[in-house]
Length: 225
Image 1 (cartoon, rainbow, N blue to C red):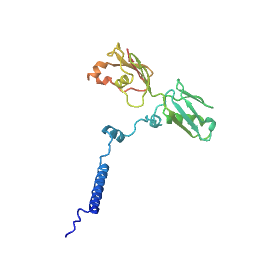
Image 2 (image 1 turned 180 degrees about the vertical axis):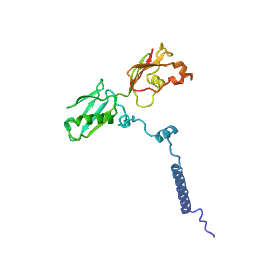
Image 3 (image 1 turned 45 degrees about the vertical axis):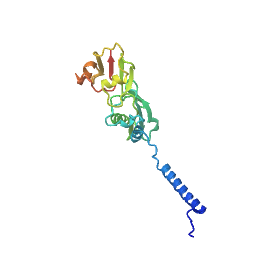
Image 4 (image 1 turned 90 degrees about the vertical axis):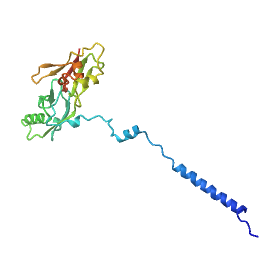
């Protein structure tokens, strides 16, 4: 008689073990094959964008041949081998600085290189072959002012290109009774006189008189009656 091996206990147990192993491998494959959670598109876009939290360094943009020194700017003046002459000093509101032996010197209105030459010329009367460097270490004169019927009047840093519309937005917009057709900018001309530049807000936002939306200059005052 032929022996039936298919129904023996050992074969059945072996078959069950094989099936169990197959199920385990299948479960593991499904577990490891599950799609990983991905970040949202907004998060991915944020990671792709460079960090912009660090404010621009105004001092880094100061060019000694073109930047014009203003009141309240901080200057580092170094005279080689003359430590008593080397100082870090602010420009006074009258535009002057004070140096040992030289007294008051006008700084406002000059570039760092021009002031450097001026100090060098005066020092030549006192010491031989003076080596002078002038560096603007802090910029405080690059500001404009917004006054009148705006939400947040005051001084603002002029660290980038800024138009009248930008200034109004930065100051929080108008108060209820602002006369938006009669805004003007006070600017000090080269001869020292103040000029008044008109700005009609309602016309400008309608595309009229776009030339009135001028780029602001340091020490401009935007007046909103």
